[in-house]
Image (cartoon, rainbow, N blue to C red):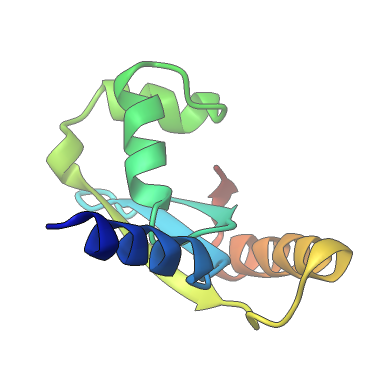
Length: 111
């Protein structure tokens, strides 16, 4: 890859729209579920798995269950993407509202 291709790839990456939305983490054998919100659904699994593997996830219940099971017993699913045109306060408010909705709908804890 030459310098021009590299610069074009970096520029395209920076300009891409990150899909924000709601996700669920499920412990497959039991169906136990946690829901969370993310500013970038494309990257959330790597972030969540990293914090869980290092014992630093903010959800104590999810961390405890993760520690007692195998990583391959967990799946992360996208539940909903929000309108990419929403920004700032409207984006944050929508993510919070949809998180509450999905937690209630699935009987899940928040992650």
